[in-house]
Length: 607
Image (cartoon, rainbow, N blue to C red; front, side):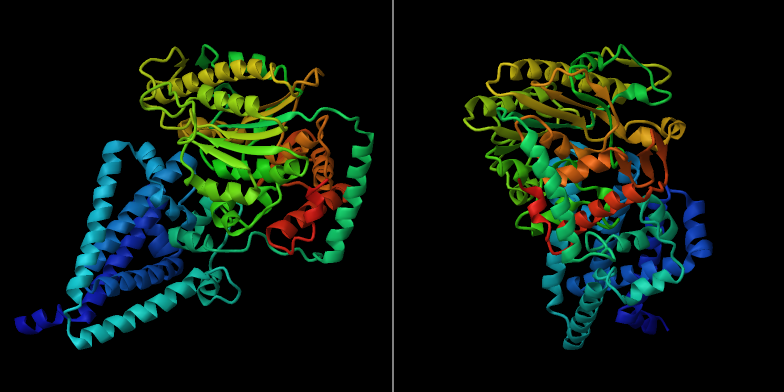
């Protein structure tokens, strides 16, 4: 009997059963990570509420497990590699849920090679441990593969067959969102997909269901009335309006246009339950008071999503209209395009030189590729920057250094400039940034993150004040659009629960125009309206697309999923009257045409 058992445990059948057990446990673990480590919720999901979806997710993981086993040639090595990978995935998902209130997406896995960012987020000791584990696993897998070449012919035949079948199945799984996909149909029998809230989507369909839902998909669904004729009519209608606006525009000297997207810049006092003393934004409020527009900008995300806000601000397109699976256009869509219309191409068409500046590495969010797609003439990253001073040993290149880099570009220029700066100074982590901060947060026992964050935005405010004073010496007029991309993920759940969703998505912004001394208006805005604000400036010609944005802004100045600022109040849904609905539909059609359509509307972005 013992001999038979010893023979059995060496067979592929026993290994397959062990793999199945490992997969079921790993799927339960992923559900735990998704449900904030609640055994009650994870157990109810797997064995009561959503058992069918749990088993479907386990099936996909089982295919992945056998694929890894077939490569390694060993059930032991394959399962250890699989198990440790799943362990790290669950931890990463829990961290992202904590920092940004959203789960891990398939496209996030590309971040595993963003070594610098991972080191900054994890810290040197954890990052070193992560690298040791990663390298050890890889070397072990390579060694196991080499050793497995000595297996018997029958084992090799079974191994190759398993590798072939699982490879084909994984390719099929990767097409989850394609029409008639059988796995998707199986999920659809019981799944309640919630595209507007990925957190709830993962909660309702399980980690694996949510993860599969976010696999490759088209940028937008095709509108029913999309056609070349429809697009050409929209283009012609708004081109007439643009031509009329440009005719009455007096000849003015072209201004230098400066975009500043300030990392995590926001006003803590806007949150109910947060009181910081003294006011870290005292200088900023004075600076912003000189703007022709100022107020709050509606960010798509809380705690992250910088590249998505940048996408909106440069293109004039709303993330809310994209398919929910298109979570990050910078990595999922733009690198595959040769060109993409944006404020960059609009201003280049008016003889502007265009420069992107980011005091960090070029690979983050594939900015090097994306900026080429947009058509930037040059990209100055941390390696190319002349000014690289930091405010602390644990911090990033300071905003003052970044602003000085902008001044250098302006001073050397012969032509009008469009400079797009994405700052890093105020990026997390905040814990060890400053040894002492004068800013205190009332009613908080551990306010290190908040007080250091307050110090950060105070430093930014001072640097911004100096920067604007320097631009006043510029030979050309200057138009500055400054905004924070999102709130930092440092507020406890008790604070987030006290505030409405839109409050946690509102950052600070202002628009400064050296040619316009009109008293500024306090308004709420979405970042995709910024290109229209720029093209309405003296010395810059407007475009048909900017005219469309301008008309939509008049009745809907800010919106994201479940957050519509309409008739001076926030609403979860909005019902538009006929004229406004027509403009909304025209905007949606143009965005679809550029994102997923035939690009009939290219002319709309030129002058």
